[in-house]
Image 1 (cartoon, helix red, strand yellow):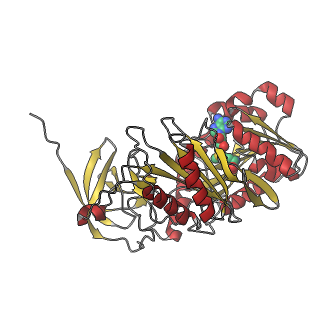
Image 2: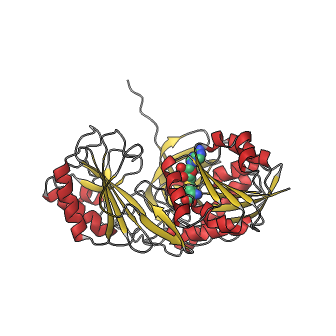
Image 3: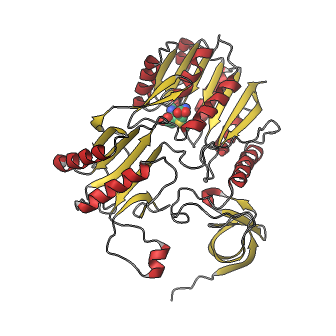
Length: 468
Ligand SMILES: C[S@@+](CC[C@H](N)C(=O)[O-])C[C@H]1O[C@@H](n2cnc3c(N)ncnc32)[C@H](O)[C@@H]1O
């Protein structure tokens, strides 16, 4: 006979802090309890769904008291879309928790004294701050709570929107997303309407069949738009008819691409987008510098805040003109080009070859000659011969992905013994871990958190390390 699991109900639990993925946490009998859809100050009854040695997870079955700081989320998709999970926290509270997150990670993981931490820099825009959104077509629409409760289910199961967190096969049909300026919503809605009217197949993510796969909308700060639609099959006539209609309707689309993707995943890696209309790149500008943004280029998604972030990195570097600077994890060379006029030479290193092609073209576009870019894994590139050949760096700037730096890269930096290391990070936990590894030779003299992504728990942080 199957044994029934004992259910645990925790009563009157006061949430005290924020946790990852938009959840909050409470402490009950020396255990941490993670609960979604709550914020600090809420008092709830929690149905436990998972119990481990040190923590539990559950969901709120009853709100006894709402937190006094709770605000009404502004997005109609809040609670189901995984995008902006902190919308029910006022912006100043979000900033407070982001600052605390940096402090906690540095003290707990990095064991680093953080008396030189500056107040977090808020995002100038709290909506419409993104310059890139990626939507998925699906024939398996997520049914919202309201639909299920009202019983007003229709046969229309096609969706163009965002994945439900943790569900590769379910997509929430997005009516409005407040994160990108218009006409982003209008473009997406037009494409959905067109596809429904012409009976085009939305992708079946489970059986990997269909026609329409993904839609990427990018924009520049100057209001130019790039649209990239990926299709499973190369049905050229149908694709052309659709795209002609789209570019005719939206003059802001200055660059229109399509790509045929018959792989088992949605990434554009290894694929060649085809330029259907207009310019091959968008142009972003920063302090008179121009950056080419192609369909596959990485560019910081909050461009306004990226400018602030780069200014902080440049200030922390305190370049005087004679330095050799390494910009490791350079992407399309934005930081390298941003500091190039203040130093003797910059070496940019990046694993994605196309990004390095963009970086080189960006250097030419801006008439900057004292930069060299190298494609490859920083772990493989930063060897003795390379460093001897290019020059020992006086200053190293790093901006790794969320996973942080490989220990070999940390070691290579330590072996170079630069005067300053400026560490830009989108994950203070791995940043603190890496900095801890450098603590015998460097001390942290400044920390500057920056908010790039309002209404999410993500926080960017710049650390200055000075040689002891
Ligand atoms: C957070 S982005 C920073 C890009 C750039 N600094 C900017 O601001 O646009 C991190 C970059 O590191 C690159 N990258 C990831 N792993 C790498 C590795 N092992 N070696 C070199 N580059 C890597 C990624 O492709 C990405 O472009």
